[in-house]
Length: 246
Image 1 (cartoon, helix red, strand yellow):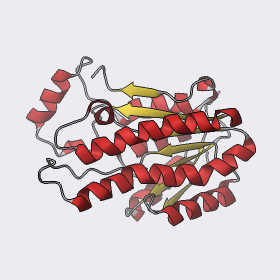
Image 2 (tube, rainbow, N blue to C red):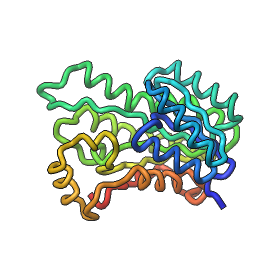
Image 3 (cartoon, rainbow, N blue to C red):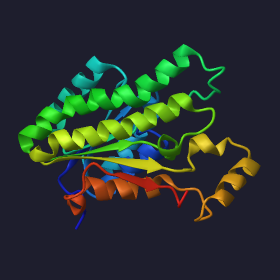
Image 4 (cartoon, helix red, strand yellow):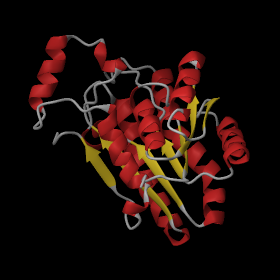
């Protein structure tokens, strides 16, 4: 039995890294997958094909989650195409790291907009249909940095901490409609983004993690499957750290 059979998931920022891992794992678990991407059309077409090879329906949408109108249009299109949205995974995110002394106002605003406002935009877009069907699971991607901060990442940490407060509030507002809202806080996950870092630096990070390894996108995806599925039907308003014990 597949854990997400007959469910439809909308995942933002899914053509690489953690988002891609979530899309692949969801499809393997039987979910139909609508996903967004910002620029990589070829990667999106490849992912579409791959997801469909698992026998599910899949479609990529070029959409900017940080734009309110675009997010509302996206949800309407996905509903038209797939008939329902059972699961929303807010995963789209960026970094523009710098020490506070040097960070520009623009770099602060952009990170808040892409990482935090996008969560508002899309959650707002899906809650009506979820309320109608009296069911839904919203999963928001925060970070270990949102829990403990990180020098050089005031903008990123603020956006990721904001996601936690937002998600807890949504859980309180929508619990009576059987809509659940939870957060995953990944630690050091090894993706295309970290592949360019110096090997020595990555080794130091691994050594500082109790489980002595970086996480994989699949580690995050498996936690998402749990929170998206009926196995977690009595869990809402929670933050699950998937960080090897960091």
